[in-house]
Length: 168
Image 1 (cartoon, rainbow, N blue to C red):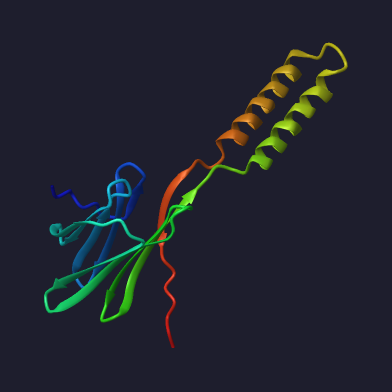
Image 2 (cartoon, one colour):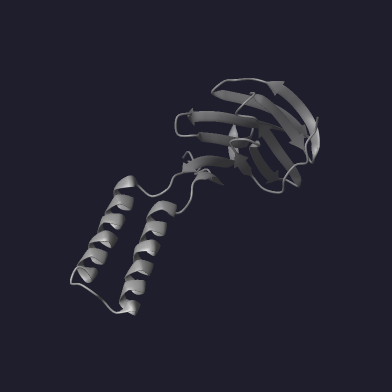
């Protein structure tokens, strides 16, 4: 069943990958499911090709007016969740997108932050009773450090432009 083509490239491990290209007055899009291997190619919002293929590289040829374009989907690094999609004409790549999986901050950074916050709490509170504002302030710093260390920048897929190498 045809899907509604998004206005920009998006990626989700559950909802699939969308790579969208705007070129020469046309909108090209390829949808791929990482779960089922299903690929759908759209030209100006209309479904023009469907296939199920589980491979590291897949190419689709699309005719738009008088011009022929090739949309290529590849997986250069499956382990790290890296996907590339390119739009080419006559063998020349015009545009490209790539995915990258972003992870939380490293475990070492998180552990170091928690240890430093714990040491700060211990040093300030070890000499017996402390004023209430100092206790609450140190507790706030400790909780904030713990939240920062475990939350980081988040995680998930991001889509970014593929750096194209121009041949001379």
